Image (cartoon, rainbow, N blue to C red; front, side, top):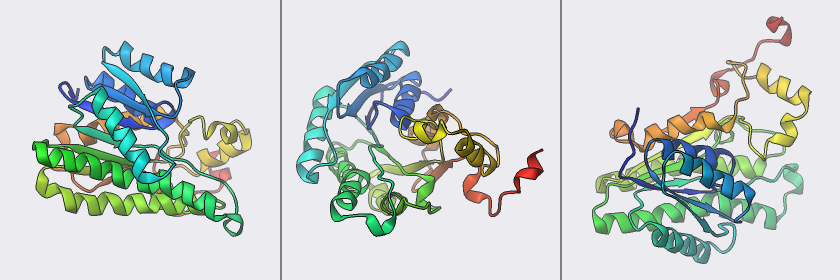
Length: 264
């Protein structure tokens, strides 16, 4: 089992979905956990409790990363360092999407998507990298992207654009930070069950359509993202730099799914 004892991780957007799954997995590996979320609510408490049951020191900080970038990022970074000054793992996961046709996307919607899905990732990474460089910390940054960074989806133009930016950000921050001993990688989930995807997945026809378009035929819970995230920030991945790991059941490599009749 990969051991993260002695490490401390900040997971933005860690109160639910993929972020909560990663927090749970890293706590099981022995890391101390700081979860950032917008609200101290039942979801946040459930995420903290899951980490605590793994024996981890888990703390919650509040902040909204969708507002003016400099003030919001600085506020979250300061709160995180106050919670644990020795954070050496950043999992930048906070994100949103707004489903509407491209021709109907307005400036406010696009700007909010970019602030949360792109700007916050970029500047959270910058703030921690500056701190780690001065301290000589061999930090680890994990940016959470999406299969939508590779494959376009109707009515998700703003989201797809933002996740494509994360793909590029992983590569360029790797080149910028590797000389300082700071590793940058990414993890891109396919369709997994989260509070955001739950309404669509409750429609049996949509779930079946997605299963038919995924080689392993699964739409799994978000927990499947945890092990890959743990690996990428661990010493076992010491020589893994600038890579985006897709956790998607093979969807991103399937050129043309078989017709439904092939499944019996």
